[in-house]
Length: 340
Image: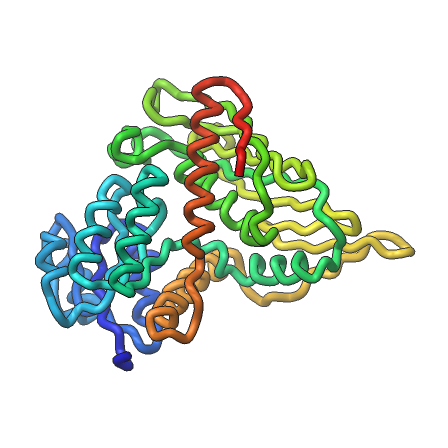
């Protein structure tokens, strides 16, 4: 394996400019060789800023370059699947912002095709690479607080209609609304921390804001019943009417509580409850940005064969099944029982 992996970034929206490109510059053994965006002027401006050699407005031209080893897909949801398939045909490793595709069958197909060509296909789940998430997973796996009893999580974003790009408000282009955008991230990191327990059933309720969109949900409240009848409640809202947004994750165990956003760990003792939160010496904004650095670095090390793929294919496929069940429950107004 070559010592330096050449990267092509496709899509130069906010996530690419804030979280991806600045962190690619810091990753040892990786170099951004090319950028691609429909707005060629924007692409050229970013290329000039970072000293990137090539710019394109057509991603297929980027894929045709033999000196590009891997691509980073940061385009709108609806474009993920066709670009992934074309990239696999071009023998490129791939990291992509979620979702890979809108349904289980297409996601499975992407993994199968990548495996046939011995290519890495990695979905960006940056919350798994946060210091607090990694620490909490270690606590849970060691059962330092006993068994989990209940979990609650929420993500409320204060958006106005003008804050949304058009494709996010159209189901055929976005795949869904608040759950697809926010809920899947919370569900993924919770399940990863718990080592993916079996999901027994899902009940969900959507609300729609006609001012924003009648096609995709503005909020989702869901009860996910996992192994040992543990309730996992997730509420997400991307048109939150409060003064500011909020995100939280609380896990209650037999002998304590763990939280993210903000990060806290409490343990029951003979004399009461003790705060055992370690000092991670990082602000929330730095933890967010550095999670992308570790995610991108992990992708490079996986290509080189030093690390195993995170998330695993089976985990992303499970996430897809649960998302499908959540939308089915909201549509039918019934609990969905899962057989697997």
